[in-house]
Length: 255
Length: 240
Image (cartoon, rainbow over all chains, first blue to last red; front, side):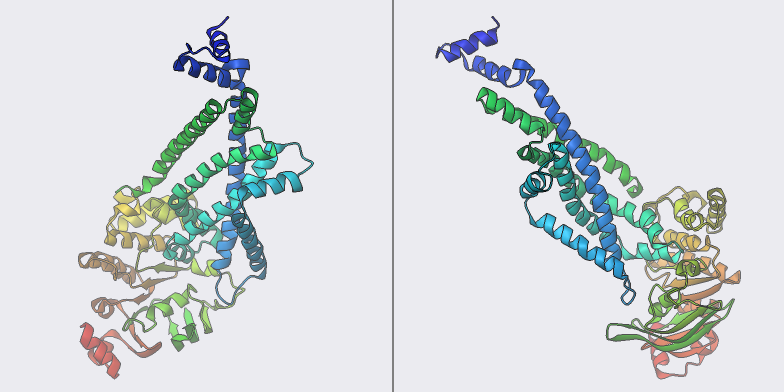
């Protein structure tokens, strides 16, 4: 009989000779090691990571498209407005307003239980919802960055005969990206943590795994503390990577 | 070369340019002076359509560039512009600043553009700055690079919008020297400036603008030596 089983037995029978440390060991063992439960957390983390990555990519793609179209619309010369751009801008404004104006949780439930009610790929639906949600926020961050670049830069690019798209691509966007990286990093950290919400529509990510263990063992503390710790470590790794990237972009600032 | 007919520009209710007609001939060095708010920068910026005229037409080499169907990028490639605040691209090295436009507009291959950039940099004495970033340069150096960047497109004419107004006094000379050299080579130039010495020395014609119109124009010696209208006399008394 292992010490875990021995102490657990003693605790169950109400033996007061079990020390606090022994108790902690029992709970820890039960939460992470018994029945190879760590594999459930690991699978949860993997799901969390790929959902984050998928939502991130979708969010950036949507965000860039929305930001560029809306900025192009705003930068049109008065009297030379393109009606197609006007319609696109109007639709995108509704998208941003609706996404930013409703709670993430409600959006997940609508996507999971209404629009994709028949789908069994819960994590995929979750990633899609998170991506669409993130796109709205990212687009506003990027739009802010594009507008913050000095107007003289666009004029200089255009005066050299570069067209609008090339000026954006080579001159405006690289400067905007550098300026918005901290805000973007913040958004991605929020996104990583928001993946925990997809457990409400059945996405088997990290929190889902922890809740599974809690309902099995009737012990909440270690699974949830462990989950918090794992999220913290993931975010810290992410922040570190972002810092490296920022330093590389700051190259042109050196004097 | 450039024919401006009945050009008007207003920002909202504010009329900045009031029915200006002017002609700029090849090889001319036209210097525009006048008090601030007189519309001289706006006039210059209309010439390459950074400002869209409210009324009137601008013809460049026989093409009406105010026509919305005209490829304005193609027109701008033939007109260099230098700004008051340099507007170098801070995210690129000096070499990239200079070669970006020639390469991406298809004027030159990268190797060819690099070579051109090098010889241009040598002309302004900044050949050792090719791999530097704009933040590492002084104002005078930045403006010389900005001139070189515009020159790399091999333009037919150069527009200067107060090129020395944002510089420390001791750096004005080095920029004017480059412009003087350019003038000597026969480049057509339109210069908005407050440097009266430069206007007198380099200009072939000086326009005095005030209240959105060209109030007086003449050769530099006549305009400075024998000003006719009251506004110009008052202006010159203040700046000379």
